[in-house]
Image (cartoon, rainbow over all chains, first blue to last red):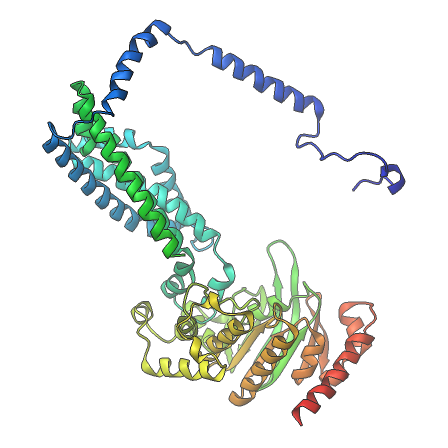
Length: 271
Length: 266
């Protein structure tokens, strides 16, 4: 508390107190950050002659979008899409089914400490490992094909869903859950009546969002041999068939947009 | 009969919420618990059904020491204690009927409750209670569609369908307007009389408590500061519980309201 009297304060301006009170520290942090940013940007080495060469190749890729070729590799594209859809749906369903118990365990307000730590460790592991790295590992174990992609995305879904579900559970209304506990309900009944209704809209919304992420990821995972449309895309790039690649990318874009639209509708319905 | 023996609760932060509280509530008695914020009213009520674990002392309901029970025994005992909450604490995304039936969770198995296939007797009783509190038409509405007063009626039905021996009521009128507050208090007290139920009611509104209950207990800093009839509440008592203030208005308001209520009753 300041002890300044009213008289001393009247007539003087008022400024919001700075976040870092020490001016020397404040300015040195600010100037230091600025210097680092300038040095960091200048350290990026741009080879302009290489860029000039690459621009024409990039332009060929862009122009291919105006002239996509759905037909000449139509069979491959169709197979790839089907495989991607299978990978997406199975990995999303399995991932969510595993995320629910792990998410419950990772919520500090309902899980005992040992369970909490184990579940948080699983979540942290899943989130720390990027999908591509997991996919490379699983392709090495299970060989090329959609199984590796399915396992990778299931694993990635666990990290994503469990963490967000646990956070939603931690933010739930304590009073509603307490009221159910006070009726003499069992633990499972308590979850079903006191917790589930509170987190259900979020769970459904996140599931839809994850479905859309998994579809996009399935396209990337094919690049490292984990099956799906990505494998077809990779082949198209390798053969410099930019028109086929453009067709595949357009299909991915349209599918993701359709899923986005659908999830918007579903999320509005379940509020 | 509910009996508290040297009930003490010290929170992990070191706050001493209750200190050796001894209290007996006979069968069928409706008792109001008053006291300033932080006096331990909510803690006391939650120590009875162990939503808050007491540090020491015991809570005895109809001869059973609740503080000594294991988790299964505690669940069975909680069925006998209906609880009504401040801000209603209905599960907002469930229907009114699901909220009422959740009061039977202690009596039915997991799958029955999961599939919402409650025994017909429970369903009938839920409808009867909804009718009694005037909300039969709202049975399939979602709880968050109701007004404050309606929600608290659902809360009351949820507590009563447990077929309890005791009602624990935590600030039932805290977020209601004055008229609805009275209606809710009247309803709780009527239902207690109909079913010969004992009740412990936490309440801020001293005047409202005086209007409806037969016994008032004052809590101050975790210890009993007053125990007597509503008519024995005077300025000196309020000063003892809450501290120095002009209590004339509070008390006079009560007298006028009692007269009003009597006039209305005639």
